[in-house]
Length: 309
Image 1: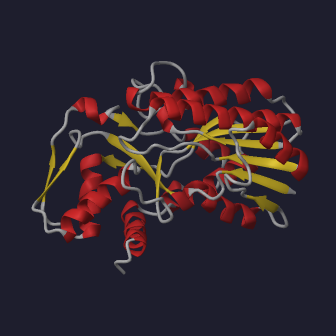
Image 2: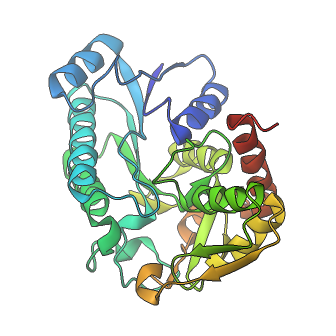
């Protein structure tokens, strides 16, 4: 059996490849680089599927702009095209399973918390990530309208993921890493105060990348729902998150939130994982890596990347 993981060398995709090799004994897990497979070029995608006899697809590839780094037009174009091309080729070459990795960002700006799957496309997107949200929603609907009953397909909706292996960039990092780098910089430079945007009151769900990858594979093996939230049931306010990060980093200075509620985005975008718990009887969110332990792992990774350990 050949399994394709698009974006398989990325943050989530590389962890998913590790889990997939263990879960599907004897399978060949394909993780082509951008140079080996340009997902923006449908002719290249078609050729790759034709030559590799792919039975399962995990679609992780896309453009992730991170916290406050969204280029709406680029997000919309890249995430739409790579998704549509992958679904089209998968359908043409008769894969037997397709798992699309969505995001909670595609739920409406004014969704009711905890957000469940029925709220998808029931309102306007959050403006700060509307390009990505529109693109990912388009792929969800294209997948739903393209595949037929005898082909297993689904879109899984993870919360904010984090953990070792996450790209450390100058700008556009995910929430936890972005805050961690600011506090680390303040610590090493002995800065007395760190200012953060927003009010700190917004509540979010978080999931370690390893737990997320395992949940995705479990869903492919056991889930029958076309759209399903996956999560660890770990949630907290941004202010509480910052306190945990500061403790792990060892920053003892003052932390100020200097923004407005508009900068917070949705006040509570936590997920309802009832379908996940029903679909996978033995899935236990309490067994997931704790937020403090996961943040400690990520900080150790950051220190290694920065050659500080």
